[in-house]
Length: 185
Image (tube, rainbow, N blue to C red; front, side):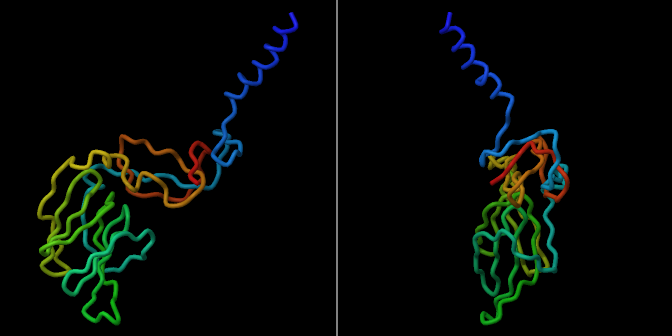
């Protein structure tokens, strides 16, 4: 009789623990409470995969690999695109533009062409001059792991965020009041 009481007393806390939610740091997460965090911005596949050149330099936030080609340097901006840098005077290289390629994670440059990904597509970009960036080729579905889990699938900073819906294309993040349902360290 005493054993069954002790067993019952040990079972109750275990059952109640399933009702509590903790994030990695051990703090309690209340999915009904709002916090300041990140909310995903969604776009259609056409909007998400649209590639544009802008002659306006963008700030480097999450810079990636760098390629030099003739008088230019191309620097990856993970998830957002490619910085175009004029290196004709290597003592004073200047950012001169930005190629928006959402969902990108790598670049390579060879024979006057930029190879990169746009979410799950392999894209080949040509540039006869800096202001004439064009899509030469697009092979769809090459990188299946990036279809919905691209570098943009995670918020840019740590803290609470609204869990994205992974059957849609995340094209960016905005700061907003969000429920405590996802947390990034």
